[in-house]
Image (tube, rainbow, N blue to C red; front, side, top):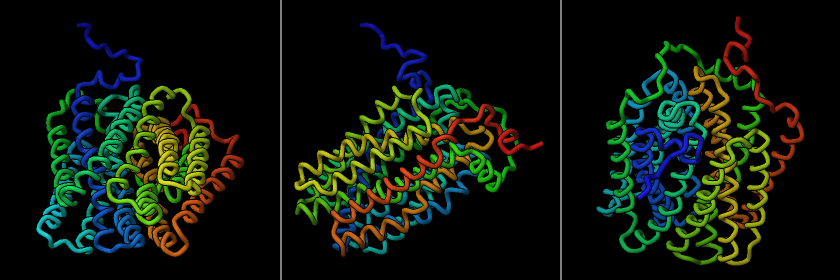
Length: 419
């Protein structure tokens, strides 16, 4: 039998690195568990409150602490040992998910328990995300980083493809409690992977004492139109368009009168498109640019507009793979461009700022979207969200289309003209 070979310039080249293979397998399990919990949490909130407004409130409680902590997480990514930080964040994820699962199984869970766990999860994720994303360059090196980002997104969306469907079946048969327990256990695989990684194989330069500040990070971003325009696109996309969990939960239950299995299936349709978009994106590395990000955001928001007028469950579901593919391709390009085109000395802070901007509006928009769905209708709300995304992106494209080239020298000294 011919041995599977990985070309140094192929679409799977990141798997040449042993540490990446270890981490990829563990993340595959954790991603499935994470998506199982997302569906379980949304369904648990609906069971406890029967309200879309409270569904939005939980999203706000999780994302609110996240956006305040993530800037500190960006500084931590530049100053601390990333692998050790990720070990501690995964322990916290395990404790949070398992605790909520036990409360559900014992039959003593209340809505305030979900609120508290959402806040803790948001704080932990705020430290985890910028560290985890900037850790990619240490696992595979700068040359293979764009490829690893695409493969990580494919991994994440494979979990999104499988997790919601499994969650629907699991919750229908056993309730939400086991779903939280399964997610908690999945984080132990990532914890184990971090311990098993070979530190000598990491692409770590000699650690320089980094006293850089967030102010320096913001100055760097504001001096780079190609980066801050990418962040602006991400802000509008995340704030209004990428609310599939709220849209799907309410469309399936309120508009189409479906159950939990049908709700989970809608998440699978989104994930199928996202997974396909991630695989396609690995072939489009040379085409990624800020212009690509803008066009992708416009396409995604246009599909959101179309989905709002689909008359049946089947036609609404048919729109979701296309929305997922457009959204994921855009997010991958934005993430890849932001990291690859930033000075390594400031990359962690830039990633933190990117994530902060990307999700800054969501704690406000999520409860408002839930409230709007209750009082104005889910279809009108989805249509409004599409408009509130596509119009600003068209304005951004017109205003900045001639200012988006990456500078030849991306160092802090050159960009900020430090002497």
